[in-house]
Length: 72
Image 1 (cartoon, one colour):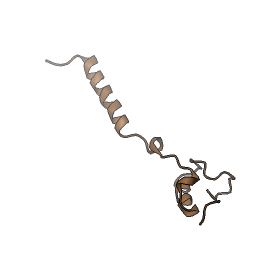
Image 2 (tube, rainbow, N blue to C red):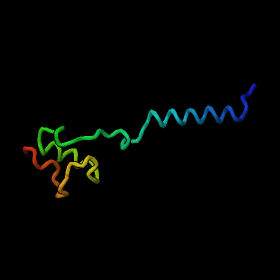
Image 3 (cartoon, rainbow, N blue to C red):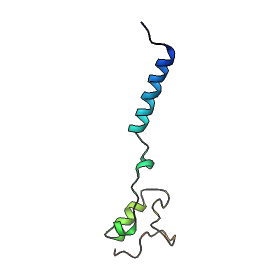
């Protein structure tokens, strides 16, 4: 005996929701960093360069050098 069409749609919808929850886009799970999270400016620079914009707000003076107060 086959399931009604609405039940098939419901099962497919639930499966899609579960897959979306399991495989979130990377941007949604990015950890937020502050300058105090880094030991050096070079460490902050590496994190800063992973993205096309200052996602963490590490470059307050907008000179392209994040956490410039940290030791190199």
